[in-house]
Length: 289
Image (tube, rainbow, N blue to C red; front, side, top):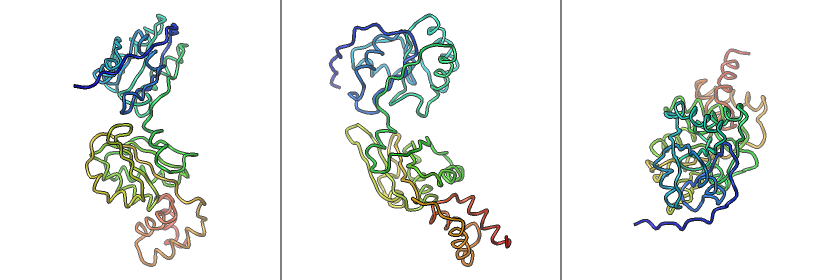
């Protein structure tokens, strides 16, 4: 039988009307903040990605609330109801199944519309898989780009990754366990031997953070089909941008051995550049321009 957590000591101060964007735990139930519990205890309406998941969280802390489904399927039905409640001066909380709302979910639409109608929007910060992974990966964190979920098919995924290759920042992705191995293979092919990290079960009992080069991570048997969603982080490419002369020199050498597409792939990987742009230059060199 699961151990029931003790009810928190809640703040008795009245909660102002408005929309509250509330972060919830990504794994460990104790990752929720006291302020988040205050809001969930006092909210007139809680918009939940999955009412069953949020119901379990509320039950663990001895709370109850009116729950309405708010996900990509139920948002169009629920949004008018929530906006009407805000118009009546009520307190509405928005939560996702885990972590901070609006990170890879459709919540921004209700935030945008609520703000446009003049309703206060209050951020209630807390757990985030994105920031948890970044904090423990050991990769540069002064500049990072959250790129969400890569496309599910390899060709689209490689094109998507190719556009990100020139960005001089740590890249952060979410990925499902069933596609992790394929995504790591494509990342190794597009980004080359950059440093990376894979984070799974963050803040849970079997939390695992594996660091290494992308080829090594792609070959790790632990990532063949893990359960759940994971965070993948990819370190930035070269510190200095390759010059046009560097690109041409490398391409001229590669074109003596390889077809233009293969030469472009080799040079793009070595210099941390967009394969598409390098291929265009390879075709220009081949045409004598």
